[in-house]
Length: 210
Image (tube, rainbow, N blue to C red; front, side, top):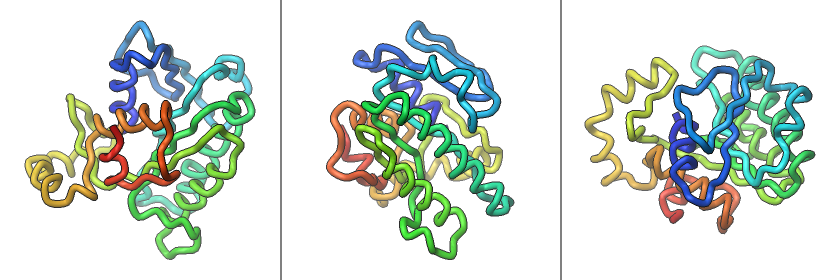
């Protein structure tokens, strides 16, 4: 869902000249600035390394819900896959800014009782140690999908159908915990271009980026 929002804003932004989307399934849109690479095993990018060079930023939006998953499976997708991609990009593009979509409640200590928060925290810490030009961790809370964007996760789609009418009220009452797919995308582009005063951005920090 976040990836769809970021892609939309990148294609609309005049300062973004080229967008490369790397994933395991084809996107539902085409654009003169957009190029796609379909690659099944994202833990091994050897076959497409030459096509990953020369980019200024990576917006890493891939992720899964931890619901119903054991730690080993969740860690493989959240930590192992993310680091495999990030390590390759850091080697190929040392001048790159890497932005990782994490989540509110992430445990930076890596020792908490919540499995997903602990694994996310370990992932963030490992990314921040890589030799990128800069790296930022985005920790959104509730995200309102705009412009027809929908989550690919069924339980999230149901959640948004039920809660959808109340999200504007929640944004007004709890602005620190709610953002939108549009604001996420805009903030990621601005941070990639100009940086941010902190390396970990919560929902309020994301909303404050202009």
